[in-house]
Image 1 (cartoon, rainbow, N blue to C red):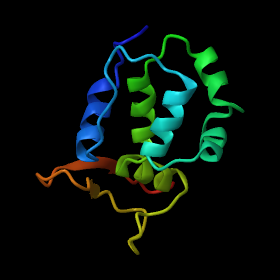
Image 2: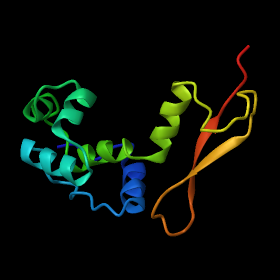
Image 3: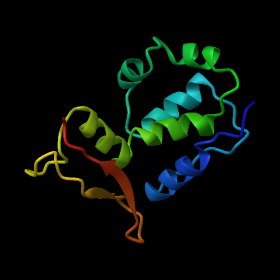
Length: 130
């Protein structure tokens, strides 16, 4: 089982910010664990089907036999992140709810709820269309 993921530090910081306990590194991924993790992150199996493209939880496990439950939980946490929401807004052409023109080059930050230290994630820069 793979335990060394490049995104693990990000997933761990997201888990801490959301007060979410990640599974142990060596915990294997099963359909039952996936269902519990979906429930723990407030997601439904219907949401999972739309998000992943797989019809069942078991298909994901069979397609990714080396994945750990911790890595799957990290992916679910990414979908809850303010950074992910901001990226989706940029891709959709929205300007973070502001009335400013997209010509603005100011960096925007999104506060992480529950971080306790007031830390923020940089979400990028918007540029003028030419």
